[in-house]
Image 1: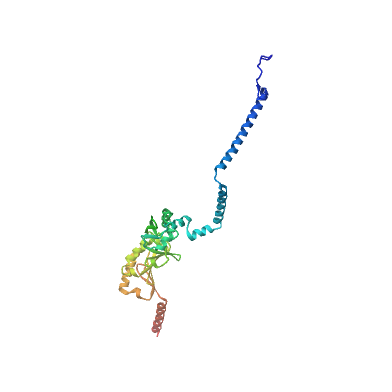
Image 2: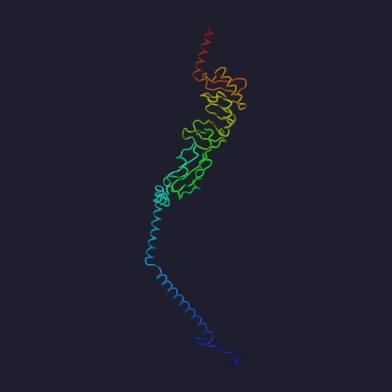
Length: 312
């Protein structure tokens, strides 16, 4: 003990007291860091020794290949390859004998086989293993004329497509464009060729939604039904029928009754065989006809002659 009753601190490894302890701790930390660095260096050398020779060369080659592939894609040549030969996986599948060689389509009615294949995106570049049947079905259902569709793979090289087409009911002309419509007026196709030529034709705004009325008028026309070529829905209120080049203007109320009058007139007086271009049935107590230009000129001349004869 010292004179104050305290025990003196024991000497450290580098001297005595607290200063010696701090130096000792610092030296220990330096030794540990040096040992860690040595272990890391040894582990790096061990890893290098364990890797097979040429690993670095392979890594460099892989990097160069990746750069080349990126350039090939960016240049647009990859897209050109796909457009010409199909996807790489499809090319490999075709080489293995799994290319699409036959497509069986059932349910064709109004559509052509080539139209279905184009809509489905199936051609000689397609392969059976990598065909996405869900995607193909969704593509087919985007075609307005197709109501239902299913697609199956039949290995090794066949695809089976089954579809149900919507039934076209009439043609609808609006603003010079002719569309094919279903019975409810829904547009399901465009008039591209003569496959729909035999369908009834309605013309004008909202005429497609009034198709049932027009078909009812055709039924009410009786013996004149076959002569009705088209129906124009006028001002959202009434119909004008086209019969062999003659316009038949029907009233807004009871158009079927007006058609019955026309049937009687044709039976009794052959009114539709005369030189007329229009028959107006909108008034209940009379029928107004419009003559052709030639017939109107001849009638005017006949009236002049009759007046001259009466004057003399």
